[in-house]
Image (cartoon, rainbow over all chains, first blue to last red; front, side, top):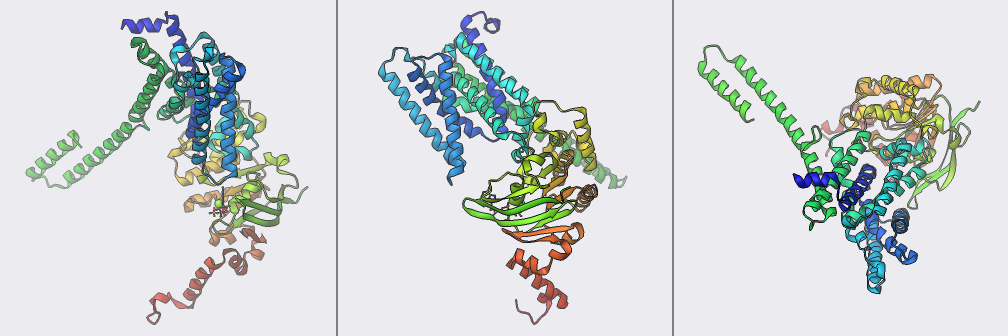
Length: 331
Length: 262
Ligand SMILES: Nc1ncnc2c1ncn2[C@@H]1O[C@H](COP(=O)(O)OP(=O)(O)OP(=O)(O)O)[C@@H](O)[C@H]1O
Ligand SMILES: [Mg+2]
């Protein structure tokens, strides 16, 4: 209890950075993840996360710095290139989208690993820290990082608010969006940009491999609780933030525990919980409704039979009574 | 005052180098209820999409009201095939109908009271008012179809391109939808509708476009909707049907005659 209070007071400056940092990236991943999920682009999110690595490494090599903005620029360019090459290959070849995504993912990621390894072997003094883009390292989030995450979240929120209607119709019915003359190319460009940005900041906490879950899980969990897009967006942000705090708290109480993976585990727990318990779409909710319905029908059937039994037949009445009790209890 | 609603010239569309529309050429007048008829895979959906600029053309062009699509977009309403969207999307009936009020011009603005009133009116037209708050995944196929039509009505267009609005719709709904289309026609609108039920073409439509990758014929129903043109469009598939029909006319089902060996 004490440690919870101490954690929530955010008096430790290190804890503060981790909490604010993961909160911000949980929020941005939650927001863009809703559209990734609704447009059925979950695999694409995974590919972008992997493809960012060579961009980060090249930005480091070219810019001779690991200032967050330099690396973010590299990440953005590489993420964009991967999206463009996937798009190009899908349109120009007969390959299926999932094979193209797999192909681009592994080529970019392979390149990234190669660059990362050669940077580490070259012994550049300031090389340490680049591998946080591979495995994620929430504990190393600096105040500079936090301010950058803040700008990313601001950009995501502003773009989503401004173009909300466009993104909504694009996600629901792309042909219709084109037919009414929506600037679909611009909308797709904006959506991809904020997605790449969110992924680029997200992998610094959870790493390349777990990034797809940070993107998709909040949206998937939120979907169980609502049938409205606006509410789903808010819930996804809430889930992202909740998981971020849970992860930060766990690694605060047990310092050997890594924050990022715990964020993802918390998200998984939230998703499973939602899947089971959400009132209308959840599994248990559905069972409960079906069970109540079945019981109601069974009781009504018993009532119908009872009405048919002649008054003198006490033995039959007793048996029906027993039957009804059984339905009440178990059925 | 333009007299042609749709003008299509030498339109050719291919997917992966395989032509799906080949040199299609026709002109359709304003103020008519027009059917597009042809077998599965004959390119009906592709024709609508290419008129709406949704698929790249290999050749030819389409003009609407004697102008390029870009200049008359706000007057044109497109209703995609119902199966083309995922109905499990988090939206209510009302939200989808309101999309009929989206314009590039109001992309950055909020919808107005007028927009909401028009959407309400459109829902009333398709008799779905009481479903306004319903989640779209909890609708039957026919109800989903009516939501799409309401969205289209909310656009208040002059030309309507609808892809199989009668698919999966029961007889009562079909009648209601047909009445709506006739009302639109009476108000001078043009409707181009992909239709599958050959039995009702004569009864519902003024004009018909018969196609099978190439254009078979386009014109008033009584002139164009002939046995010969249908044969040309449906090829072998229809001959079987026609032969059965002939035998039935000759007297009873052939299988019931003892002398016929099966
Ligand atoms: N995206 C696509 N990629 C490749 N081929 C396609 C694509 N869409 C359609 N086709 C092909 O183009 C042809 C025409 O398709 P289209 O959907 O226009 O037919 P249709 O007349 O609408 O058929 P239906 O009556 O079944 O709706 C078909 O042979 C189909 O296989
Ligand atoms: Mg079709």
